[in-house]
Length: 98
Image (cartoon, rainbow, N blue to C red; front, side, top):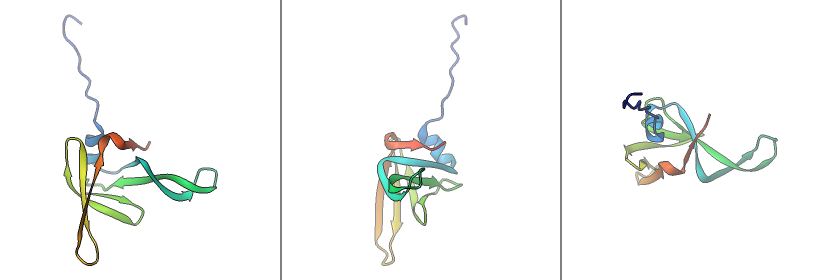
């Protein structure tokens, strides 16, 4: 290639999540539900990023995105009494669903 190197940009997990409308699982986070064989047991919990990347939901529960940081996403929510709860999800623990 005569000294010219082509650089292919692979979208990072952070970039894919920020685009929205993507489902993912977190290593070690499970829920009690039916598996692919119809048997009840612990299965990986599936999360979904909203279309605009401003929130992450799982079923009827969800949290708002406070910041897409370099190593993790910071989330927050308020309960019925107004208490703020925060949490972080590290990108290295995320597996994207196909």
